[in-house]
Image 1 (cartoon, rainbow, N blue to C red):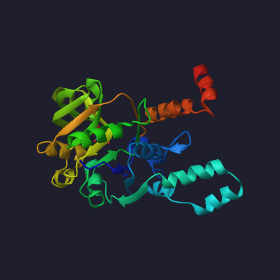
Image 2: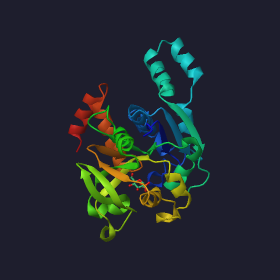
Image 3: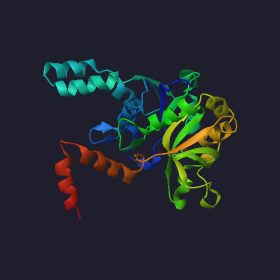
Image 4: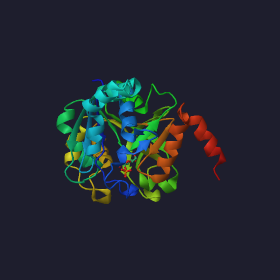
Length: 290
Ligand code: G1P
């Protein structure tokens, strides 16, 4: 099997759950302490062994491009002032991976966004990391994208990260059903986007991370609009599943969905409390909040 080297980060959605801030500022650029959400996503991809990233963006998302683009004037300014720590941080940001951009001209759903990556990805398996969600695991050196890549490099096909959700929440997610072939690894037989609880194949929800076979593109191309009038990646994967294996991997970890206000604030606490500079004072503050 080919190694997974490329990733696609869809970051073109309107972010309507986070208006008004998301009108002019991409939700992917909201800060978790002092780094935008999408930088955490890129760092996770790099820790998973990804060396090439394509971001799918749209109008009002240019700040993302600027964030990952070199800023030589700013570097010269920092160098002149001897601010080496900040300078190192900026240089690392630009050298982590090769980062490319493509525009999704019109909102058409996650499946439509992924289709714009077709030429760039070519004929090799690739990761998809949703740009508004940070996924943390206990072992930072083994992010969930790495675990999915291991499954695909070993067994072929495609793999998605799964988390169990309560039945009343299945209608917010892609839900996968199938047979557990080894602890935590499920061979999928059903995959439904945002089912009603009574029609759901279970409670295992897709959780913002995928490693896909390039055969997905041919299926995306013929996938009609589904839930919400959008081309759903889940529907294309359900179609691909009839030809190639689809695996689901349950992982131990936390999903921070930044497009959601409460999770955004919780995520800031999560990352803030871990920081050596502000963690202790933040902890003291939070303990005293009524
Ligand atoms: C998307 C996917 C869905 C998945 C969810 C969380 O939905 O379509 O299958 O479960 O992300 O990863 P969205 O939250 O964009 O509506």
